[in-house]
Length: 262
Image (cartoon, rainbow, N blue to C red; front, side, top):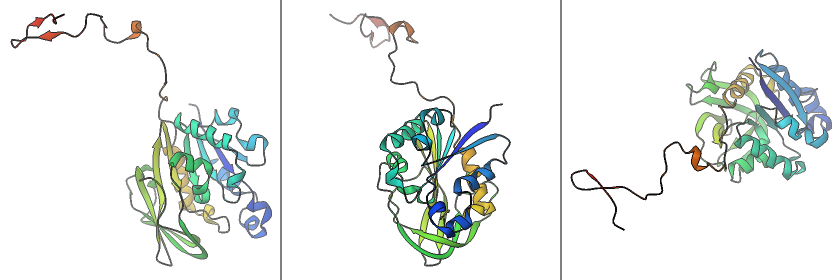
């Protein structure tokens, strides 16, 4: 059985410019996530970063990716519009996409949502409780009532996103704010999961329950069959029901077939 092909994209800026972030993620957020997902025998995992050729995602990589994870923060504008458009096209064609934390402001996410994706925030290292509000959803499998994070960045409502297809997690913060931090959508043939916990200065991606949620999200977002092959012309000879040029048929009150008047 072919393995699910996963690519983890990280802009990889904070880890190289900020000593505190480098202490938490010494090999980068992308490698931390790769180590987690790489434990799954059914996944084939690779990483990509902004400074690599073609910003890490040339067509050959995207075309052989079943699920893409995206983490960005400081370099959203450095991502080329052409790359964002290619990712959008791949999602519509069936590739799954997980957008993590501050990836809500990425060109990729905004193109797919069609909205501002703006939110309220505060960076104060406060407690976050990620409440599971849809425990029957596959992404919530194996999780308890909530995930406790000792330190996190506050993300709060209003959150400028379209109404989610599914709302799985709602976060509560020490300051009283709440946030729709675990949402899914379908675009074309592709599935999208936005998961907000994951600020670069805190060891959130080392938390086992956050890792479980991301792993569940990868399997949920996997391609769901073949994409629609459109646009395409369907010749008359391929029509599933016989087409004639005689015009519409008519029936009288007794149900008998009659010829239409010329």
